[in-house]
Length: 457
Image (cartoon, rainbow, N blue to C red; front, side, top):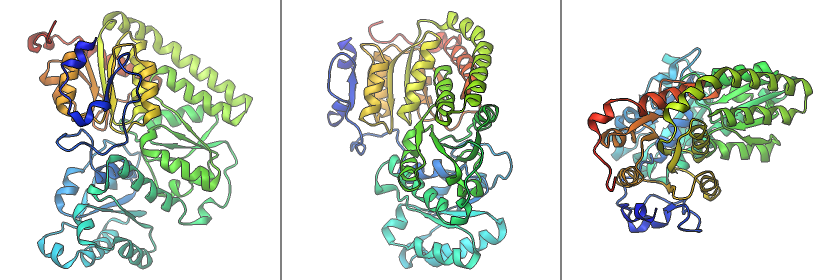
């Protein structure tokens, strides 16, 4: 399928970040800053930190910068809460020209004191933006002063947008979370008696955290903290009581998991709750870690029951969509791996796959999971993605809000698997929801009215 690569519109600087399986044995280039001239699908450092920390529902999230930065990231994840919803508000210091010239530290301190008095949060996260990095406001000093005055954890998040890529924003968020976890040793002085885990990188977009927690409860395993879906400050501060960290969104939370392992000897496992195969593997990995026959027995019963419940309907959907072709472009590569397996289960081949934050090992695995001719891409842009969808004759595009217009303009079915969706797609029930959404999108008669033939078809 060399003709597909020949028709792609790829910047010369990015040639080694787009590969077709079977045409090259080289590793996919990655871990780079986005090429100049490429309107990358990635977000900035600030946005990366916000998507990780935002779902902590009882914390105050204050953006130190112009009001537009707060407006752009308002409600950036559709993270549901079972209680407080302070996170649904977007607060900003609203820096103006005078603040840029004379400094914004006094304004930040006044804003924090007023908001803490009005909102009564359990912690505060203060996000630096680009302009704060330029003018040099010392937000660490302001946070220390306000913390001393109020007795609350007030945590700086060094997320100036120009400092790197979205992955650097993830690291800034992990640094802030680690500071919260280690702030008060009394919160972790005593170990948890029952088997207990933390969920890292699960954001409760459409209630998935509650589903996953229910699985572990049935298995006899407690969940101390979820970082950060339906998150609570006090739960996160007790995170060291867990015996194991389960990392779903590996791109965003692996730095935190590694620090907790190195400094507190809490091991971690990379898991995924997308698709039957990976959900079952995640639950079994947890059961095997605790080496408790009762937990293993309960896990096996849970998996058997849930798989047998959803399999008949999945078979019916497979008979309708078998043979369709999919493109997958998401933030984390580990999610992309799960999606390839989930699509294969319903008979859909993934012919394009990519991520914003994958590493060399991730892309090696993606190559192994796809058939010859599939295209693997790192840090793509709208022109590339559009040409890939056409060249590979894709029927379904799975991505986020920035990929949706590409699919619709090309007359291709779309499935939102990112921050803005309203349907739970994790766990066993989530796999069935995902299959239904794929079927409804791919088989919608509207595409016959809109679609123009792909080149060469």
